[in-house]
Length: 170
Image 1 (tube, rainbow, N blue to C red):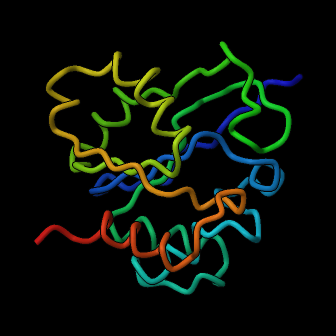
Image 2 (image 1 turned 90 degrees about the horizontal axis):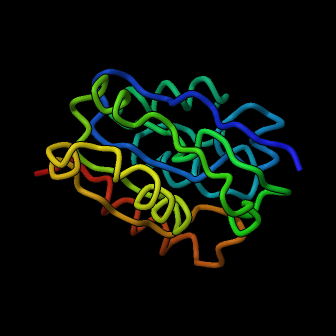
């Protein structure tokens, strides 16, 4: 099996919330775009939250998303996986991204949202131990239903959960 590598983060210095996936799937890797699978709900969910057209060209969606204060990245920098399913990640091959440096460059991030269980579990196991306690305590963590087409939850239910988690603080 081949080692696969994630993308650089989508983020501005002013980001307030970070959405973390585990590792891009086959369609995303081929397109070199986050959440490129046509049935993935990420862009249709984020469009009404961040105020953009889900069908806009990728660069426009990314610009609108990051302008709205959201950052997108993956927990893993690399792993060995055949196919797109998180369950196919080979044990012992998860290498996390450098979150200490990322959070230092994005001090306004106060909420970390996990796009599914694998992102949450990998972050907890492979990232949290390397962060300072001060950083860990400054962040609010929310595990959300996966936007993957493999996660059989109704779109409306996913949208409601994501909207609640990513709403501007009052």
